[in-house]
Every structure is written in structure tokens, then in C-alpha cells.
Image (cartoon, rainbow, N blue to C red; front, top):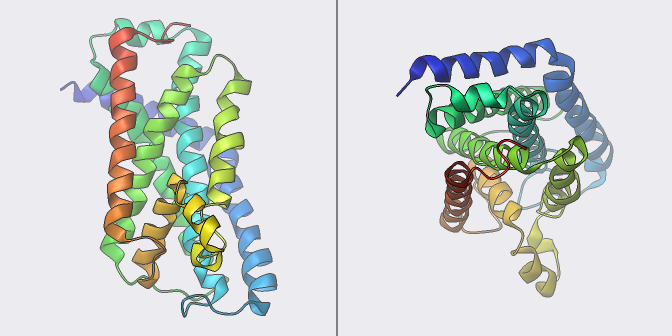
Length: 253
């Protein structure tokens, strides 16, 4: 294992974050804080409790997941797309480093940045609403696991994308709508039976449900099923990356 190469890629990506700190960290934190103000304070004060949890506290896990998914995909996809865009991908591919080391460097940095953003949002939430974490270990586990999984997904998108427009296509048209429809602002038990069944086809439901369970001990879906779905998606992403490096799909174009 070439730890020096992993460290070099990891540090370079983190330094890029500090150079664009307003876009990388401040922007998602501020936008999520506005959600707390509008949905938590203004609208939440007129909402009834959901599963014994105040509405303002109930939406915290969903908002953290919304930021975590978008940031993980964005950080990882931009991280690998720019070497393709400016041609330095050839230097990376010709260097004496393996596929595993390249992925660890880029995905590790994207995961770290997303976890930092998620942690800041959790701390910021304390300014607007009181909440508790029933299972701190599982909360941290789900936070890191989700960030890593969607950073891998973002890495695949960055390799697939042929332009900046394509880079934004999946996060804007697929991931964000699925997150809003995945129970970020409501419990799926509030939906009619037919729509509950349809909603269960949304993979984001399992992420939000498991994360909310780690806070309040309540979940829309069995926690074991949620963990299994996360691991399945993680496996699919790893398989996809292995296939990309094995075949060279879009690595140089």
C-alpha cells in the first residue's frame, strides 16, 4: 500500500476545500440553517409532534442527510472530474499507484469534507432547537457510512461526466428530489398505504430512517433492513469503480 500517494491526494483535495471554504463549507451550512429557521421555527411551531418528537427536532436528521448526500457527491465528483478536465488524470494513471490508492485518496477526502459539514450542521441545529441523540455510536457510524457510500457514487459520476452540465445532472435531477421524497420533512407513515409502498422503492428512505432512529429511537423502516440497503448500495458502488478501472471506461475522455 502506497500511503504516501494516498496522503498526497488526500491533502491536495482537503487544501482545495480550504481555498474555496465559502462554497465548500459555509454555503451548505448557511442554506441548511435557513431550513431550520423556515421549517423548524416558523412552520414547526404550528405542527404537531411526530412519533413523540417535535417537528423542529424531527427534521434534523433529514436535513443533515440532505446536505450529506449532496456534498458527498459534489466533492467526490468534482475531485476526479478536474484531473480529467485539465489533463492531469494521465499523470495519476501513469504514476506507480493502484486503483485502490487513487480511490482511497479522493473518496477519503470527500468523505472527510462531508462529515465535517454534517457535524457543523448538527452543532448549528442546537442554536435553533433542542434535540438528543439516543444512539451516538450508530449516529456517527451512519454519518460516516453514508458519506463514504455517496462519495463513491460521486466518484463514479465524476468519471462518467463529460461536461460540467452532466456533473450536476444526477445530484440536481435525481438525488435532491429523492431526498425530499424520502421522508426528510415527514414520516412516511403519514402517507396513504399505496404511497407508503411506492416510497419504499426510494433508497434514500432507508438512509434517513436509520439516521433518525439513531437520534430518537423511531424509524419508518426496520433498522436492520436500512443497514442492509446501505451496504448493498456501497457494494454496488465498489463494483462499479472496479469495473471502471478494469475497463478504463471514460478515464481518459
